[in-house]
Image (cartoon, rainbow, N blue to C red):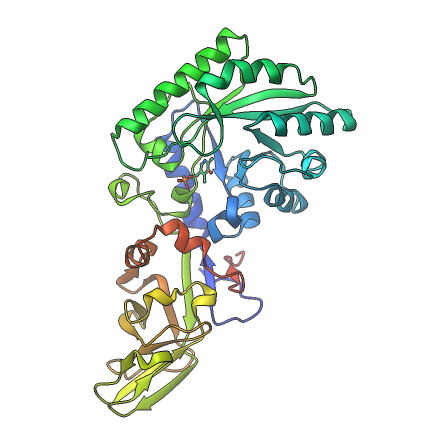
Length: 379
Ligand SMILES: *Cc1c(COP(=O)(O)O)cnc(C)c1O
């Protein structure tokens, strides 16, 4: 597969849309046949590029998309994306009109926002469909079970709003079998009963993120909301082997310069690395501003010519250095893989995440804005 790189940037995030399609199919197999996928493409599709990712998934039959912010939804609409776009974060004050104009579906999790949206919809002469968020145990946003009857009465008064969906979010679904997850499922069921008792029938019901799809398949749900699994990472190590997911992103750069240094030479800021032998260093035009985290300095390897070589010295904002002494054939312009596979070796975002005490989600999201996302050339 060849990838477009219009700027001829040596550093590039290759986005393998074939892997995305593969993951989409694998996840669909894990869903119940009655369920649809609401593909989570917030945060620029976890750094993979929300527009191409959404279009690719749409071609796979996905009609529902989830974003965190109104602006993210607007970006997709401006790119011409049709289908439902649910905004998890709802409309903040002042964003009501742009939300309506762009046919975005807000999440409602407090009455103040509901009133604002109702007024904006009334002014536009429209009825706005929304999804109601229930807090079943995340303690972040959403109506608590005990506040639900009163909230539903208040919402019913707002004649320019129409409840289209109801959902909640798991806090611990990535720890399989956890009691908190069962409690959340139970609270969600009670919330659905409350709705029913009050004569409200939501068209859409959803609860599961990637981890939830694997651990808590719920027959009531019409939608599931995978994010990280679409991009080819498991939500946690505990769920790593559950699905045959393919990483979508390969993070690459090229050797920009080679230099031979004598033993005893200090390297990069702070001279955190000093050569112990005559050493050949490759200068790589990638740094922490690109998402090659400084915390990985002297910690990780990169792949050149299918071999692992160590990153040495402090990773700078724009540069990093690799010790290629043991690979004398390395030349300027050689491909360098930071994340992804080359030959028999692969480096996974999970490895970086472990080193950095974080999760693969954050690794993907922090691939820098200046790194071009390169998509496959059309054949
Ligand atoms: C981010 C998000 C998801 C996706 O979660 P993953 O763990 O990436 O699958 C689903 N639902 C909501 C509300 C989210 O904010």
